[in-house]
Amino acid sequence: MRLTIIGSSGSFPGPDSPASCYLVEADGFRLLLDMGNGALGALQRYIDIYSVDAVYLSHLHADHCFDLCSYWVARMFHPEGAKPRIPVYGPGGVADRVAEAYGLEPDPGMTEVFDFHELTPGSLGIGPFSVRVDHVNHPVEAFGIRLEHDGSSMAYSGDTGACDSLVDLAADTDLFLCEAAFQDHLDHPKDMHLTGSEAGDHASRARARSLLLTHLVPWNDDEVTLAEARSTYGGPIDLARSGRRFAVGG
Image (cartoon, rainbow, N blue to C red; front, side):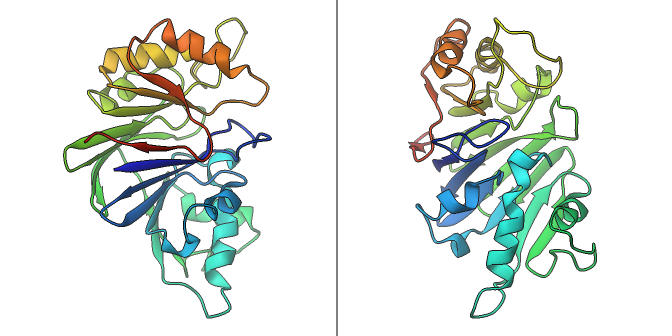
């Protein structure tokens, strides 16, 4: 597997990054994890946007899904005709949510170019990937995901507060892409996001072989977040930055 960070900014796009979007590739198959604001523009730096094979939406907050609306325009109104349908996986109500966001009637909404699948906890196949998803701790229905392919594995938290299900998803993974939107020295709401030290603790409990911090909010000092994570996790650790590529396992 290969991971490309398209966008890693938390809650809203930053000066150097779109909101959440991650490209995972294996065997020529291209899967997008989330499509937050600004992601579609940045995605064009790395691939032909019409070569995407599937999209996974961890939850339906704007900074994780709203560029699916722009992608619908690009696929629906291409000068050569609408592009073939591709699967979109997301929480319950995903098709109606994105149709409403663009001011469309639910029928047909965006179903002419997207084949929507509503997620439930458990296992599924997406292209060449063996996938497991489970609920994580956020104010709306939200999922974490584990992907495996050819002996390699990675997990992505989506948005979450502390929860045991995330530790289970990330257990013994080669790479754990984990949100760290909050910082320990600041007051913050419960059951919404992780601090850097909480992300590191989840990675340690999961025995993840490497940790990549993401959902980095523009007003935070990322070096503080990194230091917090290092206080609870002793393995290789880095910050997700737009444009960076990582080999997963192997």
